[in-house]
Length: 217
Ligand SMILES: [Fe+2]
Image 1 (cartoon, helix red, strand yellow):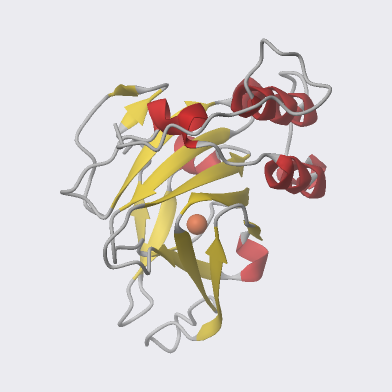
Image 2 (image 1 turned 90 degrees about the vertical axis):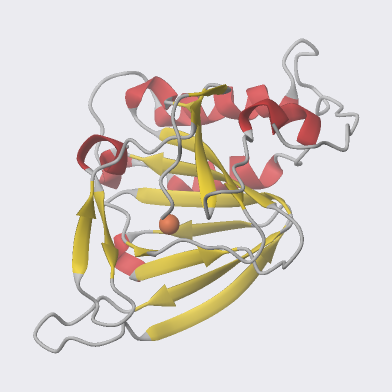
């Protein structure tokens, strides 16, 4: 569990007082994702999902129970919710100066909100497998607390990293459909662009309980 600055969180105006804002966000995301019938990525209203993520004001006391850190890994993946079976909602805790490999998003929508600290996104072109080499950077941007960004395979590949040399960063991620969890995703060599399939299942915790040692991706 992270050390916390026990913010006092107040329910948003008009929200039921019994539902904390973070739980309200999860409930609202489930509502947008709809009932448990089939869904594909074309049916997702990603703009509405981003708006909900943006409207939630991060409060550490809300989500710290899910934000398990591990100093031995670059970052941890902590499962928070499965959104009627249509999504994976994860909290990722990033160690100082650590980041992810270059990866794709398994033909799913990815929405990320920074809950604490800041995170740098570096985007890349899809590698040309007929011409191996380092994937070409197309865009870099650093997002601060409360900021939300969207990513999909249509926009290329990316890495996420914590630029702060001293402090953890924490982010909330919504993946829908949960293709990476169900079928895996690929990471890409920084030298050659070569893809390697990663079978998912590397959650450090699920619903606030530690499940396994995280892989050091
Ligand atoms: Fe990503």
